[in-house]
Image (cartoon, rainbow, N blue to C red; front, side):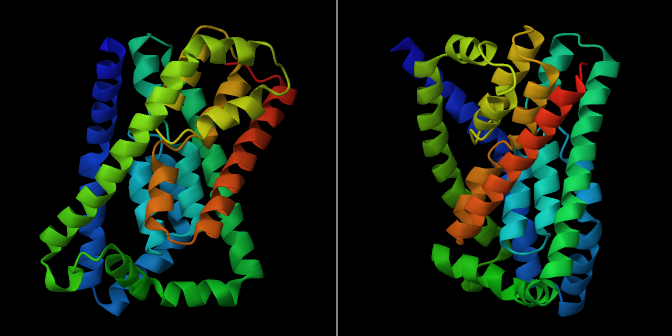
Length: 294
């Protein structure tokens, strides 16, 4: 009973931490829908070419909400796929505060954050370049439909956004997805509690080359728990630097969870998830082969 109450407490705390970011994101989306002109939207879309640069830098801040914000913005086609992936890859979640609380050397922290930024930036620009080169016409058509896509999101949620104020519409969207996140996070926390961190530690310790592959799977857990487990295992010398990086690169907080909720194209969401996993694991294996240690 005590453990059950603790799970509920952790679920509420994790969910409440991202609530302000969800509201701010929807507020921005509603402003774009209600107030901005086509010219302003075009400027936002054009600035998206440099999105991977800014996204990879902003993503390292220790917050689950930023990846959630990115998912919502991508669902509305305000940012590019490359920007979304860059943010997901660089997202730190709870890694930074755990490092600081354990008095990890600042040089170590900066190196790890720098690697995550670099991987996110390189991957983001590469993805956007590939899409523009191979699917320029299709990408332009998607950008032209971004305004209607945001409208479609409102229609799907049956919130009556077209009749509500920006503030009210933002609140309705926020509450809608917040309930969804609380339920899923609660179920995930129960699973993690049943399996236990010790079991995860022993499983990872028994592998070498497959470490990044397994850590990547852990990173796919759509809440902050994955980054906590991976960081603690690294600090306990249970897993290597490349293995930790694989999991943290794949991990995007609740970003993927919000993406599946906000973006109605399930096939596209699965492709994005697979792409994120492959990038994280490939870089982890590459770092392992290089003998990277920090």
